[in-house]
Length: 103
Image 1 (tube, rainbow, N blue to C red):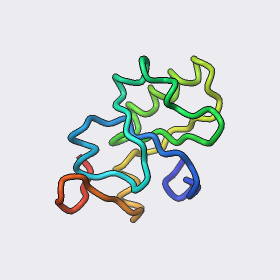
Image 2 (tube, one colour):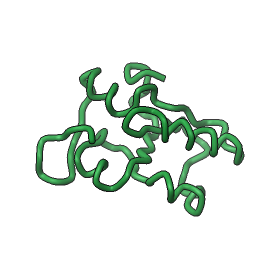
Image 3 (cartoon, rainbow, N blue to C red):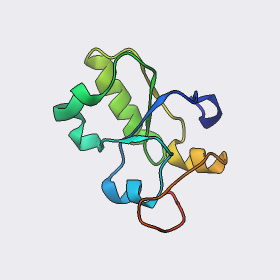
């Protein structure tokens, strides 16, 4: 899924590390680092479209595969991750008081 195809009501699941998240993420996204997915899978909704995002699409692709193999059928990968999100001009916010950037 490209950044332009992400519906405004999609549940964005950002699986990057805390410092990556703090530097810049999509407004309204939900942060759940990749390595925390297995013990916290119950936090991932199964009744709305979930778009999983990381920096470039690799980690999020692994998370999508993992969730699909564990019963989720509503998850999609954001092609190109936050790098493509930023390149497409989609809005970003930071948690560290600095201008939002992709790390």
